[in-house]
Amino acid sequence: MSAPARSEPGRFPAPLLWLLAVVETARPRQWPKNLLVFAAPLAGASLGRDDGLGYALVATAAFVAASAAVYFVNDVADAERDRQHPVKRRRAVASGRLPRTHALALASLGVAASLAAGFAIGEPRLSAVIGVYLVFSVVYTAVLKHVPVVELAFVAAGFVLRALGGAIATHVPPSAWFLLVCSLGALMVAIAKRYTELVMLDGDAARHRPVMRWYTGPMLRLSQRTVACAMIVAYLAWAAAEPDPWMRGWHLASALALVAALLRFDQLTARAEGRPVEDLIARDRPMIYCELSWLVMFALGL
Image (cartoon, rainbow, N blue to C red; front, side, top):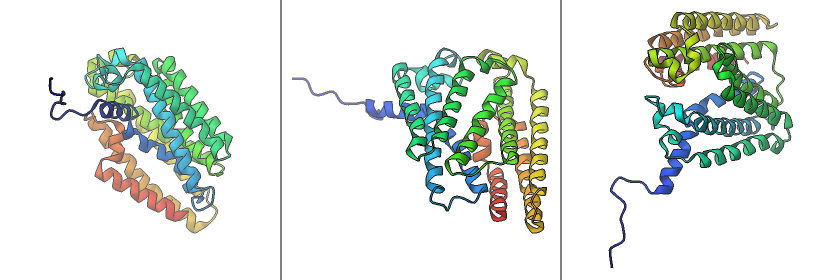
């Protein structure tokens, strides 16, 4: 009788390989963007309430599930194009490590879990916002990702809906200034993402993302800087509207840290070293120092 087969050294069991492929497709490195859910409860100083921190965590988990579902669907839809990409061809669906049917089934579970979150905390409006996010994501993937400028607005909308979801979950009425600053910041990041892709892929950019044929490097850089300036103006207008003189002065001072963070982000984007924009925001040490400085000043001011 032959000896039982042994797995080769260094090989993972098949179930673990499948689980690793699932986690990889869910893009855990993108999850930090869901922390935007905490923007409104932090600004409203509501995290200490009974419906504060816990509800914000539920909303964050819901957006993690919803965004993961979108990634699963996108990877199935883009599998053929991803196979021609120098980096994306290693994705689990494109490489065959995660079957398409499994990816779609997991996407369905993510959608169901995310939509149930709002009802679980008695706030169906959160489920409605997540529903809008999912619809926007589907429409973007199916049609609008090929429409210049509009596709940037839809990418930015995904960030703003996270902030709005956090406000709804924790019962913090979002101000017009809050939504404007969030919208401009999200649009700036979306433009930076396109610029880094354009530089990294060079002549192949339009082949991998057709909308790139409408963009140029100088145009994207000018747009990013224009939106960053508009974001600073909106933040200063919000700070200047504070009726208390001491608070007004503190908020205006916190704008210096925000400007430092935006300048550092501009420098990192200009280098276009092939790193994702998320890495520029979360893994560059000077950038982290600038972000934390602003966050501490902003929180203390509240």
